[in-house]
Length: 236
Ligand SMILES: [Mg+2]
Image (cartoon, rainbow, N blue to C red; front, top):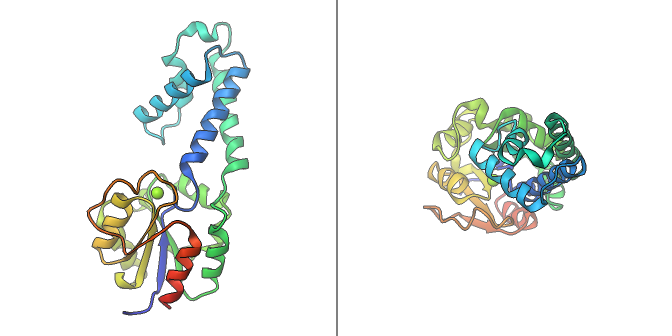
């Protein structure tokens, strides 16, 4: 086997808990609206918000406006709805600056990898600005190789299309069998990366996506990044 040359990571639910962060941010937003006078139970508002996010996609910008359209007007009688939306948006952003944190073992492991010759990159799905913001806020960007950040929005190809993974290898002139990909989603991460010939690592830390059975078996499965480091050091 040839030596490992590059290691790429998924962002969401691989470098940090997207699911946990989103639920905390939504909760704080709802609380902010309630404290401004919105008169409905938290639980009902959260459920309605989650439904709106599902229906309008998570990258839609006006979930809180939609939430207000979906609930009885009398629950915010006499309050300008824009004030409620503003309070929710502020609470969301404040949660971001306080609580968008990587899993605790991610920075030290990336730090260790950054002291090797390995190219360290990202292959992520989503809007360019949002995914970039995550890397900066997580304070991880400086640990990656600058030319190895690939965001589907900027490439015009999304996961799980194998062309996304092929494109990464072509652009960096890397043979796929010398590239490792670490992700939490069997279908979006493991299947396409393995199909193009990459070495695949399924992160099982967030028990959300990996239970959906993919077509292909990952080469490795990990529960934390220390295990990843062991795998990588055996390959160099
Ligand atoms: Mg993911």
